[in-house]
Length: 150
Length: 423
Image (cartoon, rainbow over all chains, first blue to last red; front, side):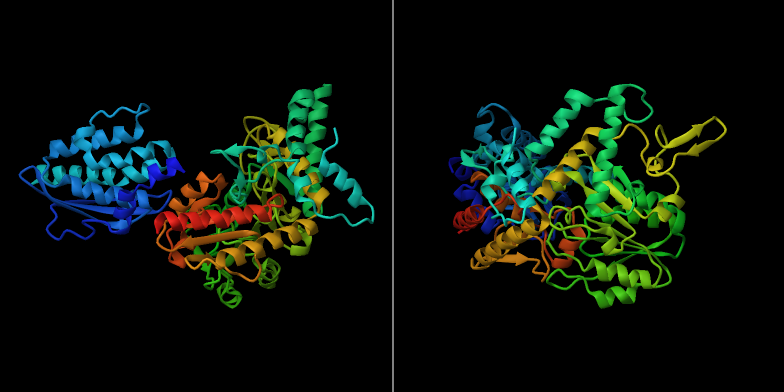
């Protein structure tokens, strides 16, 4: 059961039951939809980016505890960060879940997101934890596209 | 070496009524005797794939150890042996589903390939613009997508027989959908997601009244029910070896001779020809016309062994045991307030789909896995059915004849643990 408690930590269960920033962002400057056809998880991530800084982030949709909590905590971690910082965070989060070693590299920046390190022991669930993050990246690209075409 | 099952088979050959000894049966399945995550494996994912008895493993091993060669046309001893083993498997399959003739048994990779074969040959030959193909809401993607592809190509229309909330097809709606435009009815015999046993004999009767042929996808039926294609009256029937305790990559498409004869070949290559020149090729006779290339010989041998194994227990005994498990598990799970059973048809095979309030099916699957319990979580390759039921996913426990009441108890305990974690 120890692995299980690592996966379903209190904080994850809390964010699953009471997701933060769980609404549509009316003034969003960009958004994207992410879908995992294997399990039916589906999220829309909304970002409001001003002068290269994420002013607000939110999400809507549904999925398992891991994907919902991950989306919820991700939106919390984005506010006030520059796009470069967000991209950096994406890389660090991704590495946390997929690296073989137990390295705590990038740990200080990840902060609360470290609760997801337990997911590493459940390879089939990594996609759940990263769905919102991939959606975030798609939203950023969409945002950049919009910026460059304007 | 004599296995427990062979002893039982011998005993049941006489008039002595044998008691169903599930432990004796489990002894024939090496894979079941292991621990996963430190717990004894409880395998309840049989609708995804079933485990293999020693008899099947030994048959495949024996083939490769002693008889391996390519089939047909060989003039040497091994080729003769391999051909005999392969063709004996065909005879066994004919007998197993009571097809009138052995040439009506086409070896395919599985049910999916069987459906695709019919769609790409019978379908392309007989379906045209404005025609309709009827399927049901319960279908697996393998009995949806091949027809969609055909309909798109032929500008035909795919129509869907609705179901009620219990997961039963509505026969009167089905009758209304049958028309002179209907060119084929394709239906799952037993639902992989809900366990519903469809009233396929009636479905065939009603279609035949209008001269419409029927394909039945029996992948989920063969592990649970005696299949008699003549009694069912169907025109095509598909089974998958791996769902019925045989190897993966082998299955059977049964088709009535007159339909198979009139159909063009599916794939071109060796084995399916009579003579080839660069100007013209004449095709081989049934069943070889539909078996291009070197077939899955060891798979067919293994499938034959699986059929023998099932017969040694007997479908009556299997049904009785599985019915007991289904009733027991249904009662246990429905007594848990937060659990909702999905699919409560009156006629069901031993498949239980369920949801737990406030918990996603994937989390249910992960937590049960920690107790060594293998269930499936997701849409079970039936997305349109899930949409009809208003669900993203369910957890599914599917039982085989080697499962026990104790395993049901462990599942129920596990479900309580899931609820605890999320409480």
